[in-house]
Image 1 (spheres, rainbow over the protein chains, first blue to last red):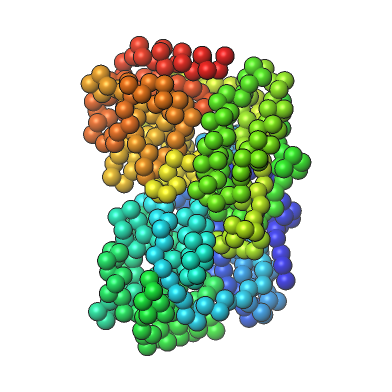
Image 2: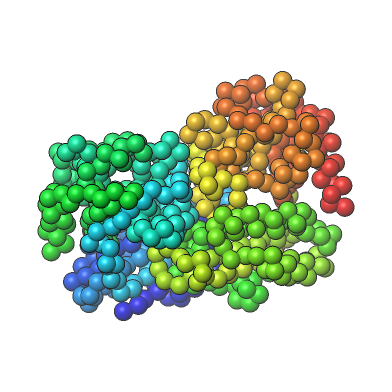
Length: 269
Length: 269
């Protein structure tokens, strides 16, 4: 089943839309299967958090209305699909400026069949030469400014890797081009603090909450990567993806991964 | 005269276009008047530089073709207009990845009447609380990831200022929300080095080239702002905009501005 809707109707937007001109909006990518949108409440909450940062007019009533729309749309979907939601700022005039009191929202909803790639069983990951884009104000939210991920993803594939880790200008690890990252060093699990860059992923949020005594948020320097024993990536579509090779070095598979993955299954069922 | 074209025809794009999803593209905003696109060669060159960085398929032949199109389109325009050009990556599939060998380009051309705002005569400028987005790989080019400028611009206006200076995480001045900045300190003119962030503006390029003995590129710390004697902003539409007030402190008008502005007029006529 394929669906592409703008405000429930046309699948087209004006070429002078400010969301295209500046990436002025937010998005979510949700896994749908067994007539369920997995982690829907968390996805909607991240949209709320993002809307607050971007001063987008998306309140509780609109959240509820959006929830009802997407639940209805996916209520007969059994096979895995990806549901993408975009909130685009609509405002009169040209140029960067907008008036928070005179603006609207275009909601784009897209539904497509989804199949996990084979490498979800075990990913080869390298460091990217493309730095992550840093902005402390925008860190954590899932906005439409994603050129760093686009370029890092392409680079990873062109080098024969499945994904690439993106680092800050201070050479701190943040995330991969499309996922959060968890690293085990000297028996302890860590995930990077996302204070200057990165997306606070839904699976990341879940693991940090469910395993708060086992996983620490911490700054992770490039040099630490040589000491990593086990590692995995997380995103909403793929769940937990073991990293089997990091910078051409083989990693161990850790028994914790079964436990972490099991916690996702429990939530989804 | 108002024109909005996508590849010479429709003014609409698909809502699942990757340029909307990720800001995966470039743009230029050019001043048109007296049947002339001002600094057209420099604008096209910046598109070429950007396309190289983003691995967009935009070569010399396409540049020439685009040039002919926009020159033709504006050949009867006398009154000031703004010509906006966007190059959008078109590639199959969903997700961040693209294959440089299997991609195309959508070209958006937009032409609208333009009137300089009154504050071009003298701008009140404050520091923004929104940091500039930093990415050393993307610094200098004019890509579509502009959320930092959107938010800084809105903040400036809401505070009663005309524009806001955006700083890095290291508290270095980079640019304003919509212009480059030039600052005079102890009799010497400076403009920030754009090695981690910012757009290398066309007027900035011209001034650095034409007045290489008078203007230095340098890192400019926040603390320096208190010592600034005179300052101005530059962008392609407004030219040179004197800053009359910086962080609520009145600045001198410097006689150099006449000389700098005169050099733009010579080029435009």
